[in-house]
Image (cartoon, rainbow, N blue to C red; front, side, top):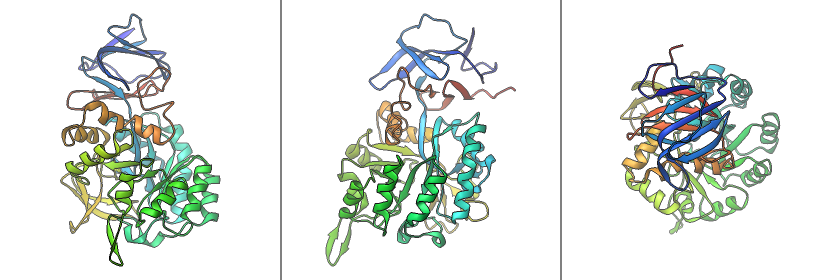
Length: 414
């Protein structure tokens, strides 16, 4: 048995551990915060959660020293970090992005692509299986998220207009057949063929999401009927109230807030959405229907300055300042550099949410949206041991993925 505390400098990274006990922490469960509890992990699974001391030994015991023990953060939408983008199309990019975000509490993620040529898209997708095998010290990959190319050109944002197109059944059927690990696909539902795309994806267990769209209320309702149950980065690159022939039309933003069966995701970096909008989304949709996403680009975790949005050979230049990426002329935002801990911190500090709700929006809610709520997203018996330990400032001290410590604030001395 070995006991370690958060301030010591002994080795913290462990492999092949049979049992792990985390003691003396404030455990955030779905129903309460246990003020002084213990949690036991056997292999990759949570086996026990108790109030007070758990009377059992373990191969490794971590004293949380009164800090919070929470479910690991799940990022539904992330493009990059640590100087890399998934569109770089390299194994190193996958591995380094996963490691960077694990340091900020992310225990699992859906790597996200951008609108690109089919050749570039397939090159990225082809790397995924090997990336899963070699990803030993980062956030777990839950499947790929395709953002585009089936989007509205008028709402493309930073997506490459050269490759935007309507859904092609032959194309998307072939992609799904050849790359069976696609988890979600974001598209504009008003495009010709998008409703059929939604029905096809749902039939394959893939999440269709509304994104980069000029749809109006009736089109959103029809999309919902065809399987589009989620809205990608609410408020960003989507329609709002407009006038058509003098009459007001309700856009995707209002439709997402109104339709109860739609879940949403928000970039809570404090820049894309100001505090009043963060509060509004929470009040209307609630923590159970709102997921936090980083939507992070390669500059996440890097110093301010020049960067690239997208791949190194096809991306666009941006400048990172004030905690966000901007176009070089500073005319608009060009991407997020957020990490998951920052999102939770903002929801507590800016939106004034209770900590358990902010954590839920970064864990249980995204797990439910992906259909993985039985395995991940909360600290419950039998679930994956995806755990983060953080202090009162929501500064990550340890990240544990399926029972394995992949990050500690103390540098790995190996």
